[in-house]
Image (tube, rainbow, N blue to C red; front, top):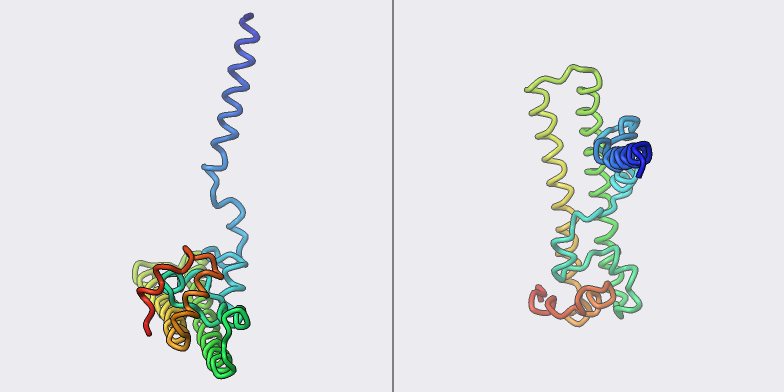
Length: 181
């Protein structure tokens, strides 16, 4: 092999390695243009509409169905008219509570972002802002979990098992042992 060919191959290998390493060095590229750096557009939309966004997975995956998905599966679960009305009322309450808390969380994240953007952040304002965000995050998660707990109490053990099966959760077997009824 000629020296030029070896040098060319070495340059190509180094260039390929550099290109492969580049994404790891720039994982946040493009996020600097977000209105609130810590929240994506999808997260903001979810918070504004009261979506769960995984906040209730501890309940959902342990046999405590949420009202949104129970309503989506109402026919297949064989909900009675009374169950439908009750779960719909829970869903409406949950959505209202989650939207209020989601809006508050967006506002608090925007405030923190603004402190950094204006370069007015201090240790004290950082502590206060992050504590406020944490409080709202905890309340939002608690709200979603609470409505899973309340929804599960309205269903029969068979409906909970069927729900788990319909959602694809390990055939719903372990949920029977943990059902609140």
